Image (cartoon, rainbow, N blue to C red):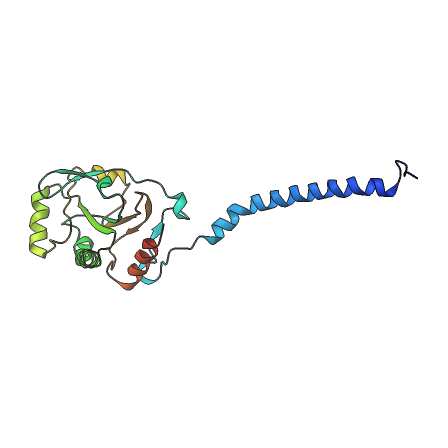
Length: 208
């Protein structure tokens, strides 16, 4: 005999079906909300130990980094060069001046780092930009006196590049990833050829 509309069997099936749909919808919503959190938790922090403890990341992860201004400076021949010429490389952009004592102290470490990267054929470049108002000739003289030939030479005597990066003092080093985005910056001189800096660079070389 057919069961009537009030039969428990007839009611149980749609009730279970509705519960299943509701449960699945709630589960999907929870997974959707948790996905950004899981991604954030999976992001590996930069190794900033010892001498690199003063390095200030510009964003919590690589996806949040902002593009740097495409500043220009004059090379040793007086030709204007753009920062975007070095897309595809990790760039350690160093703002300095010949009259700045901490800058002068830091230059040998930058030279050794550039020499090491050249020897290793690393996808990276140290790029010092001098803010000397005396121009390219003054910087060339300084390079010759201190044997800094392996370092690229750039001069921004008008200071436009420094203003574009909102510098607060010299020296300031700005680390830029291969896509032209700011990773972070270090204000003051630093041992860029040391083991703590090497750990930071190696982590960046591993980025996609």
